[in-house]
Length: 115
Image (tube, rainbow, N blue to C red):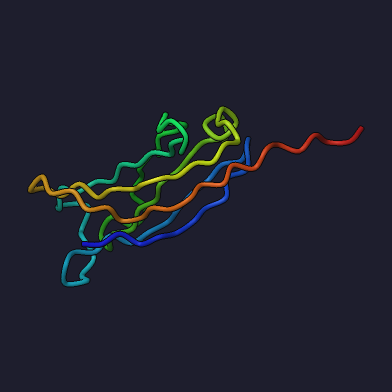
């Protein structure tokens, strides 16, 4: 299965959620209560491939394949505002790996509040 290119903007210090519905090759949603699949993903700097952050996976509507990939405020605060990219992979019960999403990850520096 070919991944979908989806560029994201990450504000340092802000939480990030990427919702998705996981489907099989026939476009039927996985039942995450019984199908042994999960997601994994990372954001990495383009110039040296160093991992900036690792996404957290959570099921949101298990019966209908609903899930989300998230970064906490602490995760995004620790990221360097450098040219970055990301990948999110679906790991299937048979061990096959499909890249679901990929793209650029623009890290926007934090704004300093005025007094």
